[in-house]
Length: 57
Image (cartoon, rainbow, N blue to C red; front, side, top):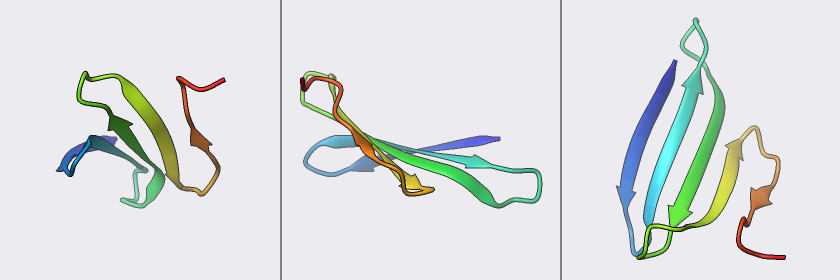
């Protein structure tokens, strides 16, 4: 099951949780957008892996 949330900070953020059948969070990400709606970065919050910056070389 996926659960989405929207955070209202200076930059819009979408938070996504993936929850297993027992109700435990198995994956958690935060996607941040610029004012034009373009993804600035995706941060994997749980399990802690890496931050992805799609518009950087």
